[in-house]
Length: 457
View 1: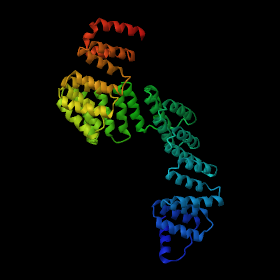
View 2 (view 1 turned 90 degrees about the horizontal axis):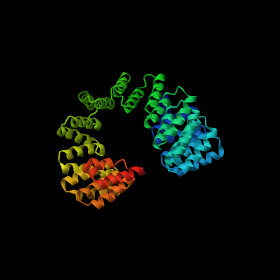
View 3 (view 1 turned 45 degrees about the vertical axis):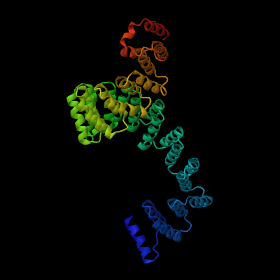
């Protein structure tokens, strides 16, 4: 290629005419096109058409350069004129499809791509293009349909398998994905990527044993597939088999350099085994590899809380939040630490941030109200819970807590109104009311209500 380009540019500088055949000109034009050198692309096309005036591929190249210049109407007009002369040329329709896609006319792009299919040597690529136009239209079933068509032609394409899995995932069609991959694997049993994605969907549905089986098929085909070891470990963790999970996390290190994420998950497994010292070692290893890993900083925070060192824990949680300022779980854990330490202003600040960002975070609303009840009294706590119910009408926990605050405020009649409302929504959660107000169990009216709603349930 370097020799070809040098020869072409030497010809231009010398103002002479060297002969280049069609393939050579196509390579030269493609080179300048890929390097976005519009000026040289035009010169190459001009020379090509001088030597090969009847060749329509150079006119299609001309349309593509016009597209680079954003002269879309001119490009489409030129392509349409070529289409009249050579209607069986798939490049014409593909080029038109690309232009329509660029100007956000995705339905028209689809029509042009479909016209190219009978003439294409690689229809799977066209089906993939159509799929992505459907994606641009937010028509994900259409996307999946055409990815399936592409995969039927090229079942060994790992990219296509990953793409179709992605669209099953974002549309929440896990069960359909499992059916698809089961059928696909009957015809293509040695597709490690298909087995791997099948495992992912089983794992999403918390069918951990089936997920592990799928991942093991992946490893039977390719024992160096490190991601399969990692995902098996996650599945064992889902089964609370943390020692086995650790074993598989460690297996990944045989096939790839250690990663911060893997160290973090090993640390989390040791944390679940109550081995805080080793857990801390692994969280620190994760931070050594990636000091921007917020989860590892929060993990250390959790460990210090469990070891009754809240002041130290606060420092780690603040670091985690600085790295991941939109993570409500970190903020919630930190707010609870502040609440338990009677640092109400700090706790309220974080609870307020959480519920503003996620108004459906029920535990945050409840603890925010607890904070208010301790710092400013029950009336303020009631106000917080009433605010929470505006976006969570069907959440029984809020109505039980509202009832509890009214009961403590000696507004017994109103408290029972809310108790009945909560019992109708979720009988089982009445235990939350008893946890907060144990004396309720000696209130005959409450006991009678429980008997009535227990029978109803």
